[in-house]
Length: 222
Length: 253
Image (tube, rainbow over all chains, first blue to last red; front, side):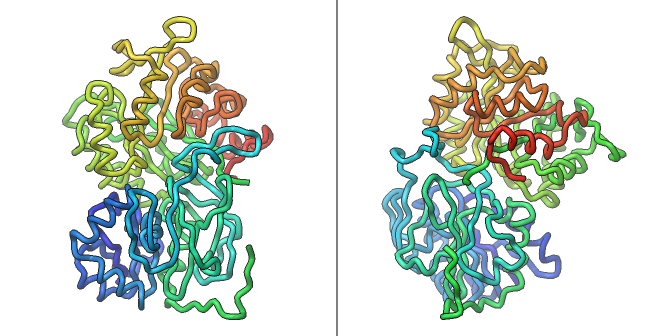
């Protein structure tokens, strides 16, 4: 069973439908029951809206411990705010995150939001951007490097340990658009809305056993 | 290379069918919203917008079924607008599978709805649609009720106000150009886009591929929306993107 953690923030229908589409034989459950999350074979941790609200609602539903536990030992996929919440601290409302990964969540700085020709770049960063894969990983299987995925966000993560960066994107500077550590894979973009590339990633996740070691065989690509 | 400019086909829906005659080669039932959405998805559309133009309230539920069907087969962002009057309308559209909901008349009659909906669901899913008409040199006014009612609001100021209330994007339609095939009102588009920090989607007047590129290059639009040039099979979305790429615009091909 694949559990999609529902803590009352935003719309999880898209994630549910996309996972059902790529994995018709899996049971997909949108749930706010900690027991179901702990029973699941795989856990998807999505998120929309503002991170302070997401953290508050997660705790209000008593889901923190179940999410922490799942992030320790199950194939675990964070999406958007579900990526940001894994880190220690967010500039959005100056709130603490779950602290599973070391680093901070920062806002795109207004004074740097210009492209190379001096045109203003809008925030939120909305649309299809290139994702440059920095490591080989089971979740990148069959996904061409620099494929475009759909993003919607105003904040980005800055991991302390650069070796967990699984992909970067540019807006206008490079930021981490995916991270990977052991059984955790988390992305800033929305695979459920990223057509072929996004569905491929979800398909890979639904088959992933959660094993990944960034050992010496691991080649840093960016 | 970075973020690409988006091309968004727009479908007008009423009574469960797409109207304005969509005409694809090889598509038997040209009015079926799911089939049409799939076709645009295959052509490489970056998003899809559905505008519910149903007048009678007893048929309004039909759009929910359509969005549900489309969302289980098409995995790109879906925006739905038309007749959104309350937070409950936003919720039911999102639950059906819409990723964004657009508001137009109701944003003017009740600006708090924009704030309330964006607080509740996040500004990423709130689009404010603005129908603007030139009323004098350098002045455009907001119209509502499908363009029938003049509001006295300045279009640029209104867009900025909607941004501050929590809109995640602005969909700007020039009423002077809509349906003319003479291209976007580039001056209006540029002025509104430059005044905003959030993305602007330009709409109204696209008659050829050069118009789409002009909307980005001269109108400073972050995304371009068009209906008829795609519906009647004049151009595919892919052709539009290939053309935009020749004008040095970054697109998802």
